[in-house]
Image 1 (cartoon, rainbow, N blue to C red):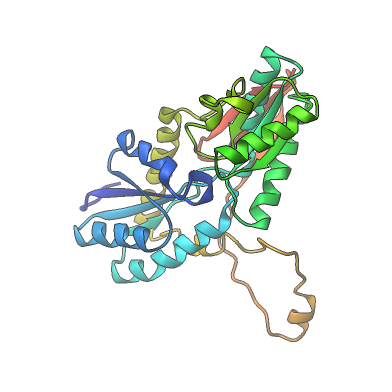
Image 2: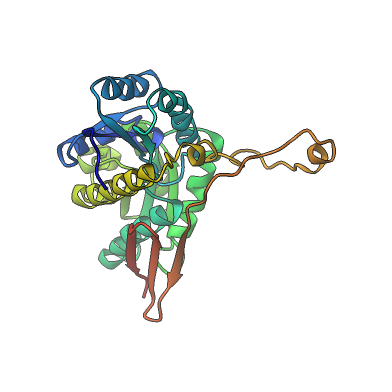
Length: 294
């Protein structure tokens, strides 16, 4: 696989990364990477790279809770790719819900090892009802298989929101509270808090910077390989949020002949439990986590 143009990696992030702010630190560990939020800033970053003669690979930095961001990213790239054929690729998303559950389960198990009576507070920024509902599902799954009795989701946009969530847990009788991010945050008010947060611990970041960098490099490599074969990944990205939202039936629409969908490719992930009680979550690109649940 060879490319005549320099490679520019653009990490695009939404509410799982504070609109890309939590990704800026990765520019130092991923060569040629630039962090951006969806919208005009992202469009300008891609356009500038293309104007410099670079090949652009965009990595949607999501653990699967923001499919709308992936679809919006693909919409931006669609017409830019048409103007620069063979030089724009959209990679598979960084991770999946299975990966997020596995990493949060790791945090829950570590909290339990230190104190079986601890509770894990999983914090995410405000987004939309569907992504916030998914957080509740993720928290429930992270607490299964004996990880911790209490894994509690919290939507909090600032230190005050985290403090309020911790306060509610205190009133329910929880002693030790461990805070974990449901995304890419590397710091938290819980790491330096006072008052209600004085003795709260921070379990983040979920992954080390070197581990994140390895996954990004894998995504870029695979995207470039696909681009060499004529596949830019944009059609798959456009379909990323299909079915995301209120449940609906196509039965009536299809009977009227007025509704059709074009389905792109699928990314497969799965989680299974080994005989020794280890939960193993992975996809076919190498992002995985082993979690002891004994």
